[in-house]
Image 1: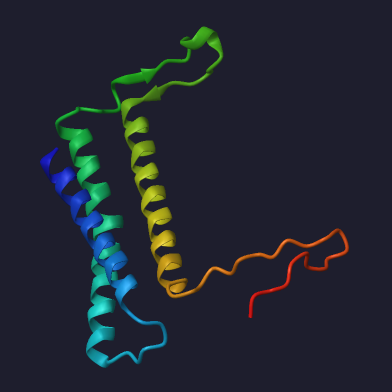
Image 2: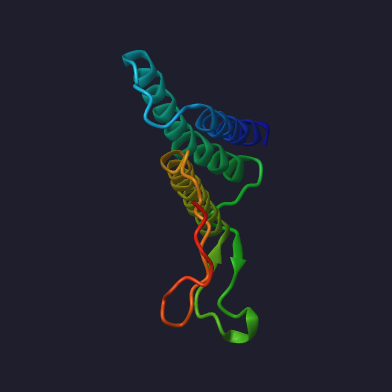
Amino acid sequence: MVALVTSTLVVLLIAGIVVAYSKRRPVGAPLTWGEAMAAAFLVFFAMLWAYGVVPHQWLTLADNELQWRADRTFLQSGDLGGVMPFTVTYKTFRDLVATGIYGVMLGGQIFLWSLWQNRGKVKTREIPSSAYGRPLVRPES
């Protein structure tokens, strides 16, 4: 349990570093070779940790401490009034949770890339327009 929580905190720490640096780095600033290598290392390390270590720690926790094995059933085919014609074991549920971890990590990666790509962009204020598409107020100059 400690390993899973610690590995998840490492991923959150790396994401926090990316968010903090994205607010500090100016858009269009030249990138040095050293900065590029440090960024490449950080991204590689973050992806290795998010897609390798965190799911591994979950699977290890589920197998060892929680004992979610294939011989223990989570839901049987007769449960829920016979609506479900198949059996779900704890091992299947363990794998579904691991797939959910991958989905959350992928969503977080997409969010961080979007945050980085859209840094420094100013949100424009929309001017209300009439039904004919003409502005109702004068734009500020």
